[in-house]
Image 1 (cartoon, one colour):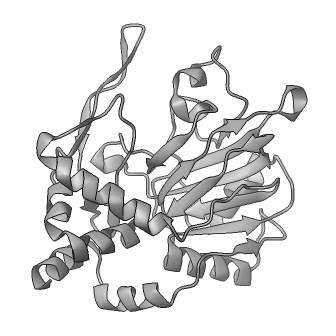
Image 2: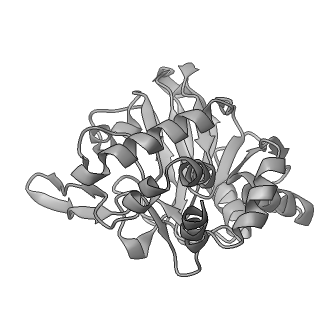
Length: 285
């Protein structure tokens, strides 16, 4: 256990204090945010406290499709630099709408109606472009389905450290997970990249890159047992996590925690499913 604690301490400072707080922390509740563009000091403090405790926080705000208002809320929490994706306008929140095979988004599973397994956003990003936070705001939900679960990777790491510390060390290797190059029409949109599952940024805070996808990813052969241990730790942690279906005006802001999404059936016509999403390089203040 001593070796495991030392290993964990290298990744997450203040280990013992955090572990005590973790056991005492209640599960996140939806916080009311009356004005997304100009939240009160108290609301911002409550959001920060909830996110620091659980890694994420759900909020209930006014029903709006105003991406600028959602972006202003994120900026008040210190999230300023967006990770521009291959889908959507640069420097703006991505609109995740009705699945379409006719658009560029149709080529990517997250923009389809299929279920999404456990993952963190931006797991294919370079080390100097780590996604440390993201926000998801519901404009219109799907007709049925589309529920999310969110799990704090610190909790998963804590389980691994206690049950299988050697798995943590293996998952920290730089080539634990390899994402092949993204090539479309002969053009390389993103080069092949190998990344660790668990790493620490310059300030010692946890960076997690993970996907449960079986296609378009390759795990190092030596990571097979450790990957299984992590999958088990996620499943055990998720047993107490309620699936959330966001209503119009509701959203989630998080420290890029592990999350999934169930399959959904979309509306038709003007009532199509619509969400706003932003990925950020900054850590939540």
